[in-house]
Image 1 (cartoon, rainbow, N blue to C red):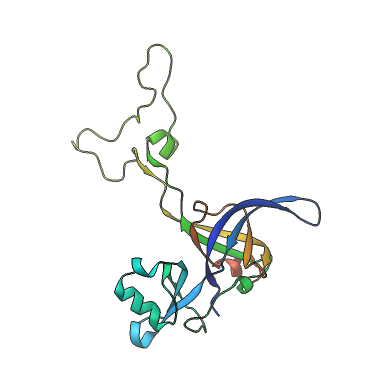
Image 2: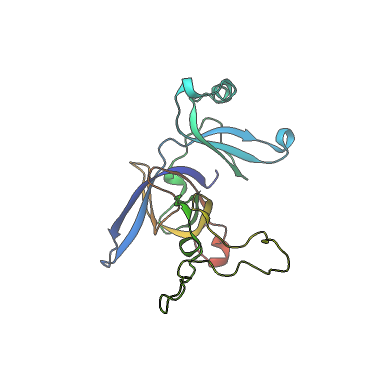
Length: 213
């Protein structure tokens, strides 16, 4: 079975180890993760499974998607994503947190919190200019390139949208697995705001780090 699952970010808390050390953890709930579709090499050209998460109102679901979910024997799902090299899973199956064990290293993929339009100092951690002797260059970005080209080159770090981008945090440790409530407690922070949906998968670097697979 595939070592990947969709979960909802509940929030952060802290737990105590047997030695009395405080560990900050992120609580992830994977209660409604379902297998919507299985893609094969013969039909689609690659091996993957499509995972669904959350409930969606039928009246707000397009008819093609309604038929797609109906073929899988499921109701409308709010979030859909694909996972490559899935292993043996059945369409319509419910995935739970028993795929993972305490002490295992995982990767968490999510969308970072959006901060809106931000200046270069906040967005790229620029230093401010001098604030003495009548300087007017306190919040300016400084030079943005050569003047001979008579244009600004693509990729120059300037003001713009901050956050709301897909990000992957690797090698996070699973501190605790709650099978009764279908919860995962992950050491540290994961991308995304509260109630956002993240993808949890087995770490790609487990073999090189010598951690349990």
